[in-house]
Length: 172
Image (cartoon, rainbow, N blue to C red; front, side):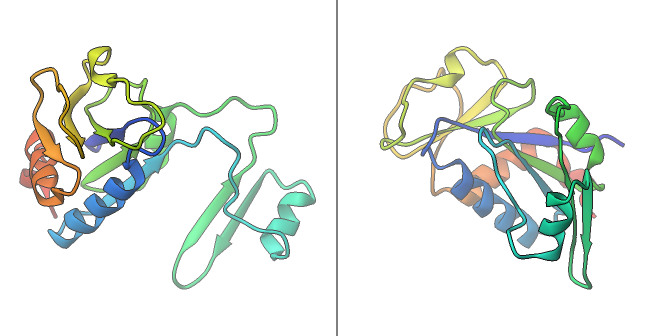
């Protein structure tokens, strides 16, 4: 079964991560199993110098799996490989009720646009992206007749996502 997805997009400093984390909290509190997928435009590291797994990667391991009684992770070095597509990454996730996608703003899936007065860029993404189905903002803004929420209205945004994706019928 293909799991439903819903995206959170916006320019740098628009509140995407804060909103995504708050939605994960709200939706899991309501009994949904949520996965997240975040796109980073920069180099990132989830492992740090001094750890055994870091030493394994530094020695040349293409993949390093870290396993404990509480969690597991696999770090995959791309080297010369291309960046995986959104669809390829979604296929690697475990089954859940909903995948919240942060970023991937050019991909074709339903999305909510975050808009903050203090964002680095305040141009409106929804004018060029029919996948944007709602807006969350901290200021008055034109919203192309889309549903508009206050950035802090986590309950209202969660209700909208549930309705839009239809996950309420499928919750475990």
